[in-house]
Every structure is written in structure tokens, then in C-alpha cells.
Image 1 (cartoon, rainbow, N blue to C red):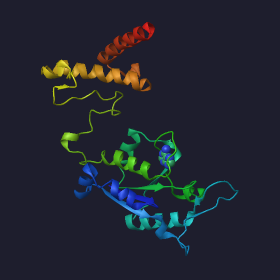
Image 2: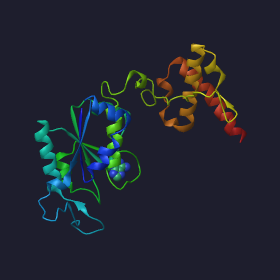
Image 3: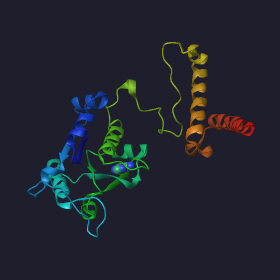
Length: 251
Ligand code: ADE
């Protein structure tokens, strides 16, 4: 899968994807990440890509023509009109489901804004997927684009090795992941939970399910939908809920 990142700061993208799993995936030819410098497409003799907003107000707005020309050039390279994800706090929230959906594309364009945003006319013309990575405002779209690339790339066939498989993890289902432990067996007088040392696979599975349920209840109760739980999950859920209620009444 090929990612084309339209940005004023292509080095920011290239640097960040040159480590670990994304680096390996590029070397294996499973993904490509291409920084496309919007400034290369300006006709302005001072290479300006922004101007004051019509109607007044603070800040500068990125102009439509260089953004459009950069996209047209990508279309020529790819041979189709790939989807364009525009990184903006006004977009729809990015989720694991969206990452899986985008991973089916052969090519994806990520459009990064700066200043007070981008001229709406070019957004209306090329953007297919406005995306927000959360309810906070960043200085530009590059970090959000990197978040999207990372989450999408690991859903691309072969990017994760067997050891790193994406099967059983947070957000694949509705439970957050259980805690993990490794050597040493004692750290700052805290021992690893005994059940993990005893090799009873059924007991370990059950313990992990309980811890998943517990951490989800504590940190993301909005993810828990009792109607969607198996009998076993429902049983653990009811029991933990009683325990939670007792604790909060005791306080
Ligand atoms: N650009 C600035 N803030 C953003 C956010 N929260 N999500 C996506 N793009 C952004």
C-alpha cells in the first residue's frame, strides 16, 4: 500500500517512519511512504502557499491552487484518483474500524493543514475522508497523519510478523488488553501474579479475561455492551460490577 502525504514538512514524515516495524515494512516493499511537498507546487515567486482569510480574522489560510496541483500530480503517478484523508479537528473520529477500512486501499493520500486551515474549495473538490484523531487541537496535520499511517499500515497484510499479530488486542473486540509481565519475577518487591507462573492454560485464559474486563470497566466503561458478551464474559462482568459498586459505597 502506498501512502502519499501532502505537507509543508515532508522530512517530519520521512523521519518518523524510518524506525522499527514501518521501516521494515518499507524495506520489504509492503508499504511505501511518500512525502509530497506542497510548496513545490506554488506558482508564487516567493514560494508562498498561504494568504490572509477573506472576511478577516487571525492567522493565514493555505491556498487552494498548490494543494490541488500536488494532488493532481499524485493522481498522475498513481494512475487513479486515490481517497484523500484530510487531517482536521473538525473531521470524524479515527477508529480501529476506519484503519481496517483504509488498509484495503492500494493508495491513500493524507492531507496536512497548517495555519488556520485550507481554502474550503479545494477541500470540497478532493477530500473524501475528513479525520480527527481526538478532541484537541494540534499545530498541524503531520502528527495525525503519522498516527493514521501507523494504524493503517499494521492492518496491511504481512506488515506485522507472526510474533506481533493483530488478532487479540485492544479494540479488535470490545475489551481492552490485559496486563503483561516478563522477567525479573520480582521487581521493587512486587511479584508477578502467581497464576501466570503455574502453566495452567485455562486458568491463565480466565485470569486474563477478568483483567481485561476490569481495566475496561475502570478506564473505558463506554466500550462495554452487556448484550454483546458471551455467557462467561457476562458472568465476570456482573461479578466485577458488584465488587465496584461495593467499593464505591464503602468510600
Ligand atoms: N490537526 C490539528 N489537530 C488535529 C486533530 N486533533 N486531528 C486531526 N488533525 C488535526
